[in-house]
Length: 147
Image 1 (spheres, rainbow, N blue to C red):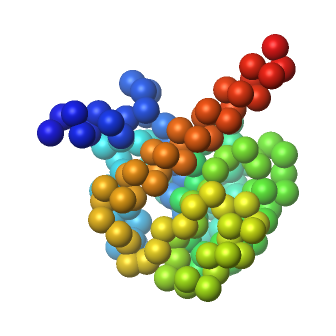
Image 2 (image 1 turned 120 degrees about the vertical axis):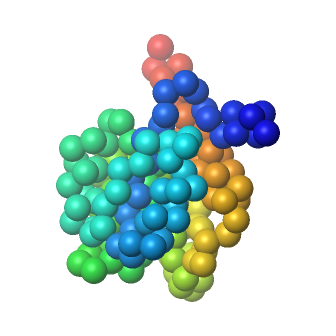
Protein backbone atom coordinates (compact mmCIF):
# COMPACT_ATOMS: atom_id res chain seq x y z
CA UNK A 1 0.00 0.00 0.00
CA UNK A 2 2.80 2.53 -0.61
CA UNK A 3 0.56 4.55 -2.92
CA UNK A 4 -1.93 5.22 -0.13
CA UNK A 5 0.84 6.28 2.28
CA UNK A 6 2.45 8.60 -0.27
CA UNK A 7 -0.85 10.38 -0.75
CA UNK A 8 -0.59 11.74 2.79
CA UNK A 9 2.95 13.09 2.42
CA UNK A 10 2.66 16.64 1.00
CA UNK A 11 6.35 16.75 0.02
CA UNK A 12 9.69 15.21 0.86
CA UNK A 13 10.02 17.55 3.84
CA UNK A 14 7.71 16.70 6.72
CA UNK A 15 5.31 19.43 7.78
CA UNK A 16 5.37 20.43 11.45
CA UNK A 17 2.28 20.00 13.60
CA UNK A 18 1.89 21.40 17.10
CA UNK A 19 -0.12 18.82 19.05
CA UNK A 20 -1.70 20.39 22.13
CA UNK A 21 -3.09 17.52 24.22
CA UNK A 22 -2.72 17.03 27.97
CA UNK A 23 -3.89 13.41 28.17
CA UNK A 24 -0.98 11.04 27.62
CA UNK A 25 -2.98 8.31 25.90
CA UNK A 26 -4.61 10.74 23.46
CA UNK A 27 -1.25 12.31 22.69
CA UNK A 28 0.25 8.86 22.04
CA UNK A 29 -2.63 7.83 19.76
CA UNK A 30 -2.32 10.98 17.66
CA UNK A 31 1.47 10.81 17.48
CA UNK A 32 1.28 7.18 16.43
CA UNK A 33 -1.22 8.09 13.69
CA UNK A 34 0.68 11.12 12.41
CA UNK A 35 4.43 10.78 13.00
CA UNK A 36 5.09 8.76 9.85
CA UNK A 37 3.89 11.68 7.75
CA UNK A 38 4.48 14.74 9.95
CA UNK A 39 6.93 16.09 12.50
CA UNK A 40 4.98 16.34 15.75
CA UNK A 41 5.75 18.93 18.42
CA UNK A 42 3.86 17.99 21.59
CA UNK A 43 2.55 20.42 24.20
CA UNK A 44 0.57 19.49 27.30
CA UNK A 45 -0.67 22.92 28.41
CA UNK A 46 -2.00 26.06 26.81
CA UNK A 47 0.94 28.06 28.14
CA UNK A 48 3.43 25.60 26.64
CA UNK A 49 1.54 25.73 23.33
CA UNK A 50 1.62 29.53 23.22
CA UNK A 51 5.33 29.53 24.03
CA UNK A 52 6.00 27.15 21.12
CA UNK A 53 3.76 29.17 18.80
CA UNK A 54 5.61 32.40 19.68
CA UNK A 55 9.00 30.76 19.06
CA UNK A 56 8.19 28.60 16.02
CA UNK A 57 5.14 30.10 14.27
CA UNK A 58 6.97 30.49 10.96
CA UNK A 59 7.57 26.74 10.70
CA UNK A 60 4.23 25.39 11.93
CA UNK A 61 1.88 23.94 9.31
CA UNK A 62 -0.98 23.13 11.70
CA UNK A 63 -2.11 23.23 15.32
CA UNK A 64 -4.13 20.32 16.70
CA UNK A 65 -5.74 21.82 19.80
CA UNK A 66 -7.53 20.09 22.65
CA UNK A 67 -10.00 22.35 24.44
CA UNK A 68 -9.77 20.97 27.96
CA UNK A 69 -6.27 21.85 29.06
CA UNK A 70 -5.05 22.01 32.67
CA UNK A 71 -4.19 25.72 32.66
CA UNK A 72 -5.64 27.81 29.83
CA UNK A 73 -8.82 26.70 28.08
CA UNK A 74 -8.27 25.78 24.44
CA UNK A 75 -10.77 28.45 23.34
CA UNK A 76 -8.54 31.08 24.93
CA UNK A 77 -5.51 29.66 23.11
CA UNK A 78 -7.49 29.76 19.86
CA UNK A 79 -8.55 33.38 20.51
CA UNK A 80 -4.96 34.43 21.14
CA UNK A 81 -3.65 32.65 18.04
CA UNK A 82 -6.30 34.16 15.76
CA UNK A 83 -5.93 37.66 17.26
CA UNK A 84 -2.24 37.94 16.37
CA UNK A 85 -1.45 38.57 12.69
CA UNK A 86 1.80 36.60 13.00
CA UNK A 87 -0.04 33.43 14.02
CA UNK A 88 -3.47 33.85 12.42
CA UNK A 89 -2.38 32.11 9.20
CA UNK A 90 -1.69 28.84 11.05
CA UNK A 91 -4.70 26.56 10.63
CA UNK A 92 -6.17 25.12 13.82
CA UNK A 93 -8.11 21.87 14.14
CA UNK A 94 -9.88 21.58 17.49
CA UNK A 95 -10.20 18.20 19.22
CA UNK A 96 -12.83 17.66 21.91
CA UNK A 97 -15.65 15.47 23.10
CA UNK A 98 -17.78 18.61 23.60
CA UNK A 99 -19.80 18.74 20.38
CA UNK A 100 -21.51 21.93 21.60
CA UNK A 101 -18.18 23.75 21.31
CA UNK A 102 -17.88 23.06 17.57
CA UNK A 103 -19.77 26.17 16.39
CA UNK A 104 -17.91 28.46 18.79
CA UNK A 105 -14.54 27.04 17.67
CA UNK A 106 -15.37 27.50 14.00
CA UNK A 107 -16.65 31.03 14.68
CA UNK A 108 -13.38 31.88 16.44
CA UNK A 109 -11.35 30.74 13.44
CA UNK A 110 -10.76 27.00 13.78
CA UNK A 111 -10.66 25.31 10.38
CA UNK A 112 -12.01 21.94 11.41
CA UNK A 113 -13.10 19.82 14.34
CA UNK A 114 -12.07 16.27 15.28
CA UNK A 115 -14.39 14.59 17.76
CA UNK A 116 -13.28 12.48 20.69
CA UNK A 117 -13.10 9.56 20.82
CA UNK A 118 -11.01 9.89 17.70
CA UNK A 119 -12.26 8.58 14.37
CA UNK A 120 -10.26 6.08 12.29
CA UNK A 121 -6.65 6.97 11.47
CA UNK A 122 -7.51 7.54 7.79
CA UNK A 123 -10.08 10.18 8.75
CA UNK A 124 -7.59 12.04 10.93
CA UNK A 125 -4.90 11.88 8.24
CA UNK A 126 -7.30 13.08 5.55
CA UNK A 127 -8.48 16.04 7.66
CA UNK A 128 -4.93 17.03 8.56
CA UNK A 129 -3.68 16.71 4.97
CA UNK A 130 -6.59 18.64 3.51
CA UNK A 131 -6.27 21.43 6.06
CA UNK A 132 -2.54 21.82 5.40
CA UNK A 133 -3.06 21.74 1.61
CA UNK A 134 -5.76 24.42 1.77
CA UNK A 135 -3.59 26.59 4.00
CA UNK A 136 -0.58 26.26 1.70
CA UNK A 137 -2.71 26.99 -1.36
CA UNK A 138 -4.03 30.13 0.37
CA UNK A 139 -0.46 31.22 1.17
CA UNK A 140 0.63 30.70 -2.44
CA UNK A 141 -2.27 32.85 -3.64
CA UNK A 142 -1.30 35.60 -1.19
CA UNK A 143 2.32 35.54 -2.34
CA UNK A 144 1.40 35.69 -6.03
CA UNK A 145 -0.97 38.60 -5.39
CA UNK A 146 1.93 40.56 -3.86
CA UNK A 147 4.24 40.02 -6.86
